[in-house]
Image (tube, rainbow, N blue to C red; front, side):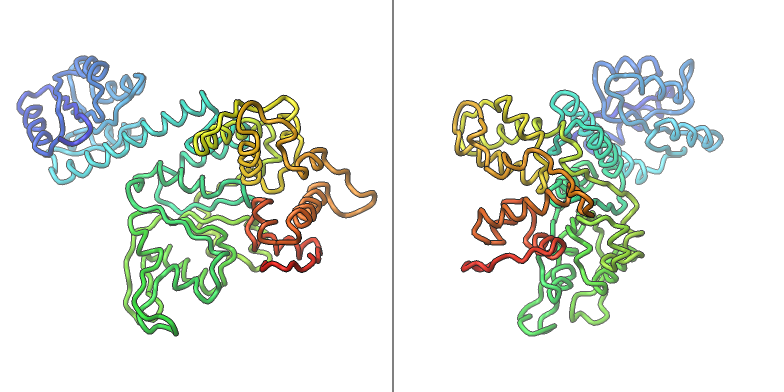
Length: 459
């Protein structure tokens, strides 16, 4: 038996029973109703996933039934069956929330496909409703946490993107949670049961990125001893998350653009053999896209192809009202993970966390809380459980008199210097402490003209 109950509504017994038998043969549980009023009663008691209704009914027609179903607590997906003379009315009904319509005589193949899609849509609708309830109750939307106005806007776009197959561009500073956004979009899409593959373009050498994405044939280059499938083939049917897409070289960006446009590519060394794939791409960058284009880091044509949905993730310093909520969420996570019994935060610590500027954003906060949970073990997290850089950097630094450095830039520079000092100039560990990638740290060192003292360790 397939999941999802179907309610067939028609005042003609032969039509009603015929459709019910057909749908039942496909493995669905079926209920029937001979009028709109009976259908409404069954929806309240049986909670069908899909209502398959004739448009022309006595007393209450299919359009009126659709409107009344939308007013119920758990509105089902509605499919309309109509004669050719009322197709315009059926199209109008779709504008008011009907999922689709079929004309008589019903095309059984099309009906079967529409029922499968309707069940998928109903499942996604239930997931979205659950997430909205979760947001109201706990301030979280899936794995994303926050009740600030900026995050409410993110949730709205994530929900819209989840119902589409279009590419998405997510941008925001390192550590703001771009991969969480991509995963949530995937979970809200009809690809949720297909692969989700994430790749950090900044972490792969330029000479290997093309092979990583598109795969290669045996002998394509030195060391290619066998055929290797790339991320696009491994993700077929699912969602591919390309983090730091602006770190790709221009030639690879051009090939990515072609895949987005044509849905096909060639493996490295694959000659003219084209491979077709169905992959939804969510790309991310820690740079402002407009600035990345101006600096030659991001191709303008690729940007416009990715920018169907554009989601900006605000830095944590711009949503300070979310900091304590996030911290408490992380405490619960690490209590479960490490078998600890930390009850929460002292009032002093809450204020310190809200005052700190968090250059590493949510990732840095998560690391700080994990460390505090391990050190504390039980009771409340106090100031003694926080790292010195958080306590010393709690108050925003004033702007230099007459200088060109903004307070945020100065605080970020100071945080980098402190992280290097605390780690003995170990840049890899400093990047982890700050909650950013090693490549991002090198970029910031160059940006602020910081000459780190060479460490005895490999950095």
